[in-house]
Each structure stands twice: as C-alpha cells, then as structure tokens.
Amino acid sequence: MNVPVQPSIQREAVTVWNRCLQVIRESIPDQSFKTWFEPIVPQRLHGKVLTIQVPSQFFYEWLEENYVHVLRKALDQAIGRDGMLEYSIIVDQGNESARPQTVNLPTTKSPQSARPDKVDADIKSPFEMKDLDSLQLDSYLNPAYTFENFVEGDCNRLGRSAGYAVAERPGVTSFNPLMIHGGVGLGKTHLVQAIGNYIKNNNQDKFVLYVSSEKFTNQFIHAIRTDTLRDFTNFYMQVGVLIIDDIQFLAGKEKTQETFFHVFNHLHQSGKQIIMTSDRAPRDLQGLQDRLLSRFKWGLSADLQQPDLETRIAIIQKKLQAEGVYIDDRVIEYLAHSINTNVRELEGVIVSLMAQASLTRREIDLELARSVLRNIVVDTDKEITIDAVQEVVADYFKITVADLKSKSRKKETVYPRQIAMYLAKEKTELSLKSIGYHFGGRDHSTVIHAIQSVNDMIGKDTQIREAVDKLKAYLK
Image (tube, rainbow, N blue to C red; front, side, top):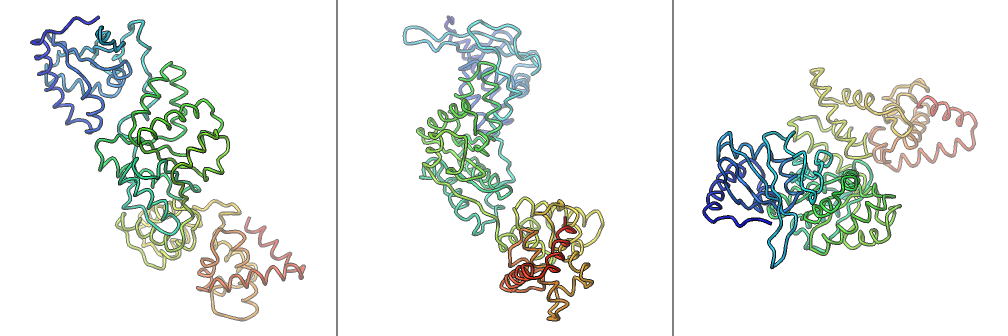
C-alpha cells in the first residue's frame, strides 16, 4: 500500500514536474502530450529523484520505450544531469475503502537499459514495443497525402466526396464505417490518409491511427506471445479514428478477426470513426466472418475505378506542377493515352521521365516519352505498349509507323493499320478512344470497325490468320 504523500513534498514535486512538462511540450506533438503526459501525477521529490505516478504497466513501458530521451532532456533542465525519475505504477485500482496499489520502478538514462531486470510478480513482463512500432502516436500518416493533391474525377467522385464528409465530421455522419475499395494503384491509400490528415489537423482532440491489416495481425500475434493482449486491445479502443488498410488480408485469421470484431464494436458504439480499404467490395470478400461483413455494410462502401482520360491528364498536370516541371501538352496527352491501368503506374512513368530528362540533360519530348515507356514497361502480354505493336506491324508489312498514323486510304496501308488496331486492343489495356488517338487521332468507331474487319478476315482467310498469329508471337 502507498504511504500518503506529505502536501509540501508533493508541491515541490509538482513544481519540478511542471518545469519538465514545459520542455516536453516543446518536443512532442500536442496529441502525444495530452495522451501520455497529462495523466501523470507527480508524487514526491527526494533529493535528485522525482517520483511520478502512471496509470498502468503498459503506460510505463510506452514512456520508457518512446520518450526516454525527451524525459532525460526535461530532467536535465529541471533537476540537473544527476536527476533521476522513478515511476509509481498502479497495479490495482483499489476501491472506496482501499487506496490504489502501486509499485515503484526506477528509470535510467538510456533506452537500452530502461527496463528493470526484475519486477514485482503482480506486474506483467515488459511490452516489447520494438515489434509494435506502429503503436505510436504519430498516427503513421504520410503528410504528403492530402485532399488538395488528390485528383477528383468520375472514377473516384463518390469516394472522395464521402471521404471529405467524414473528414469534416468524423464519427457523426452515416458513413461509419467508410469502406473504400478498388484495384491496385487507384488511390485508396492516398484517399484514406488524406481523410486522416484532415482530421488530425482540424481535430486536435482526436487521435487518428493508420495501420495496415498485416501490421494489426503482427501486433495481435505478438500480444498473444507476450501475454499483453489486454493492453493491445485497450490501446485500439482508445483510438478516435481508426484507418485500417487492406482489410482483405484478415481473411482466414479467425482469432485476429475476433479481436478486431470487439474493437470495431467498441469504436462504433462510442461514436468513433472507422475507415477501411479493400481490393474488392464487402460482398465479394472471402474468408471473413459473416458478423464482420455485416458490420462493414453498416456505413458506406465506395469504389475507386480506373481513371478516365481526362482524370489521367489532370493527374499528370498535378504531378508536374508539384515538381515545378513544364512539358508540352502533346506529351501529356501521349502519356495519358498510353497508360490507363492505374494512378501509381502513371505517376511512376512521370517520375522516370523527369529522371531521364535530368540525367541526359534534354527536354521532355515525345521521343523521350516513348523511350521511357519502352524501357519501364514489363514485357508481358498485358503490358505491351502500343508503340511496340505499331513497330512490329510496320516492320512486318514493310511500311513505316508514320504510314499507320497517316490519313492514307490505300489498301497496303489500311490493312496493316486495321491489324495493328486489332492487336492493340488485344495486347494492351488501352481504351478504344486511346487506340484511335495513337493512329492519327481517329475516332473510336473507326477502331471498332477495324477490329470487326480483322475478326471477319481471320475467320475466312488462313493467310491472314497465320499473319496475325506470327505478329502475336513477335510481340511476346
């Protein structure tokens, strides 16, 4: 049991601790300060040793693992280099007739030796925070992801609008949980982190945590191994806004799902905001408990689709503007027509293009753009460039690529052009509109006619079928 602290002794401890807090407040974010330092109660100052009371063993371990250097700096200024800190840890909350039970543990000057070799039998073994590095109050948000640099288009308007509504009123709208789903590289992570950053910057009282489902699972496994599952669960139940990425990876992990189910229920019932991403809609998720899937459908599910041409152009312009780079509109249009798979690949091509231009000391023109696309696209059936298709077809029929793009209606040009359009549709993921663009700006109806014509010829003419098969083999 604790011996009551004399008021004069405590006043002295409060004075010293307040000086420590002034240093600490300047060194860490406000939310971290409120969460980890405001609950601390200074108890006594005995010589150069300051005793502070913390609410749990987990709390003590977190401070020692994450803030030992900040505490050392504060003690140096408040007490001196010889100043030491002692923790009074509550291990039993007590009741009206009995005071809380505590145990005192000293701190040291270095993180490596901060944990004591032996502790009271009633206290759990130290929580290995180095394996739970995502349990940190910096939220794990990337400040580069904002609504300002998220390009809105028809492909993502619903998700963006819902995300902004949630960001302005987290936990209050009917969009709880908010599920953002879509394929790889379409901006799911960017959008949910933009929501998190907006909330973090405009709601100082809410702790926002972004974590991948893989990290959540690893933390859960570690908590079981170290007998700290209660601390793990309690931590997540204190989160104000939980953003969990790639929820589909919880599939088949029954125990992890069970814990997440309880965390989900607690947060939702407490009016906390839950945001998730997935590679598919909730109805298509496999390996997740029905009770979880039903809860995922409580709020709003919004999908992100492949960006259309206009959105791709806007993304390129936004990226170039951010980098302070100007390139001709023709190059931008060429890139937008050449890559329509996802935003991530589009941005990767832009970065490579700027790097090539810088290294070779040349301007970004169509020739450089074609060269970069040719070098970075993987040589698979689905990722063959339209330039490669045109070059192979032109070489096979002994004409030039310029002939394929020309307005010529001569048979020796029209026939190869139609085959090139047919192969472009089959071997690339470009839209009919983009294919037409690469053949002299032709209309998509012309591309449709070409594809139908080649299909008819393949069915009737053995030589044409063999020629197309050879071209396909060359493209491989």
